[in-house]
Structure formats: C-alpha cells, structure tokens
Image (tube, rainbow, N blue to C red; front, side, top):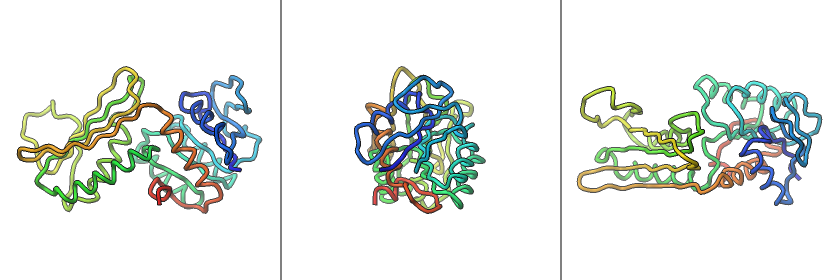
Length: 249
C-alpha cells in the first residue's frame, strides 16, 4: 500500500486526486497540506513540515514558491516527490535537477498519457517533415491559469527540437515586429478563457498542406490519474529524476 501526502489537498486538483486515490486499493492518503485546513477524510496541515504521518510519496499540485520546502522535506524523510505544479523558472528547474541527485523525483509538464503520446507523435512528425514545414503550437486553458505559454506547450516544443537537426527559437510575440517568419522558429500562442481544461494543437504548415496534431483534456481527472499512477510507481525508488517515459515503458 503506497502512502501518499497531497500537497494542495484542498485545491481543485488536490480534491480530484483524493477522489481518485479513494477509488483504488493500492494506495491511500495519509495526510494533506494546504493553507486551507478545512477538514477532510485525512489530517490536513498548513505546512509540510508539520506532517506527523509517515508516507512513501508526496504529490504536489500547488505553487512554485513552495518548491524549496518540498524538496527539503522529501530529502529529509527519504521519500519520493511527484511534481504536478507548472510555471517553474529555469532556476527552479535546476533546483529540481540538483535535488534528484539525493531524492527520487518525478517531474513532467503534463501527467496525461495522451499528451505524452502527442509529444511522441510530434517528434515523429518533425523527423519526417524536416525543414519543409513551419511549426506552430496553440494552447488553450481556463481563465484562472497564471503561466503562459503552458508547461505542456513548452514540453511539446522541446520534444520537437530534440528531433530537428538545427537550432530553433520560440517566438511568443509577433505583433511587436514587422518581418517575415523565419525557418528557425516555433510559434507559441496562448489562449485563456472560460473553463477550458487544456487543449494543445501542433500545426505543421507546408506548401499546400497542413498537418495538425491535437489533444483535448475534458476534465482534470486525467491529470489526477496520471499523478496517482506516478506516485505508486515512485514508491521505494532510488534517487533520480523520473518522467512519464519511465512510467510508460
């Protein structure tokens, strides 16, 4: 039985994760952490350092500012961390990488199996289409999302760049300049509105033909299921940086 602490337990994602765990018999929530300590079916603390229960894994869907305390906690307790939070700076990503030398950390920009399949398909398309197609990524999310472009859009762009034999740059803002599109750029476009859970389109635009790869998330549960699967997978793992590629093997 995998014992899990949910960081952000009273948030929208935290509640969905707790619901997913409650429906399984291979894991359980032993505690939660949230600034809102309203009662749940498990103890909820205002700080990760206050948690008294023993656990195997922490699942985090909160805010990047909490990263140092989470990394310190899992290193001190010798347990795993599954990171579902997005919007990290380059410096914070380096912190995660450094911490993984002494703690098992699962870090991905998107917990959805479908999105990770989309990334693999995008890599294949980039390898086949080569330099003949322009690449644009359009992502859509709800009006409460803070970071833009999404971490998933960046993950998809990075996956494409891994397959291309030339350096690429990400173009976020074309309206500020008047010049033709260059071949070494990937356009990144963010749309925010309503209650859109998450949609990502990768457009390969060539001469007289367009290929579009798409993924649409219809509920947050797909991310919660992925996070719980990752938590069960990470229980007892040795130090290192893990992602969805290991989970899907």
